[in-house]
Image 1 (spheres, rainbow, N blue to C red):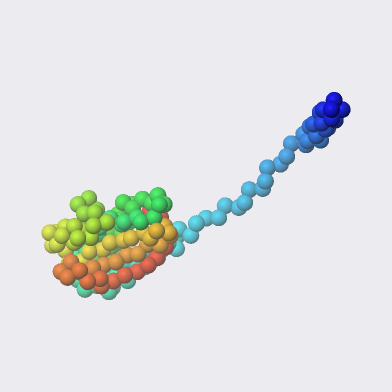
Image 2: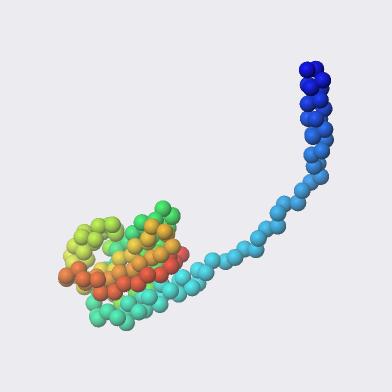
Length: 155
């Protein structure tokens, strides 16, 4: 029994002596790959241009983009970007994000009608967090007249 204890102690000492004591190099850093933000930004701008070309004249009310994913996405900045793209393309746009909830389209429609707008644009970030759906509905009857899916742009 005493020999077994001595043998196991000798094995522990031998194993401790076999460990590597020389410094190891850290793994090589992978090259930094830039996210394709420019194409995502261009996709948003192109879709807004398509919207402006499709809709007849009329004011567009924009409701804050609803985020159904668990990713942290600055939806207020995204809403401001959509309003600015609409303004750049010559369409009157009103930001209703402060007065209407993006998750409650009924209250958003009511706020849009009270503001005298003809269309309501709203966005939905899908559960996956990588897809943004923009939709435009007429405020008079609630019919969706325009819809596009695109990657979620970074504001």
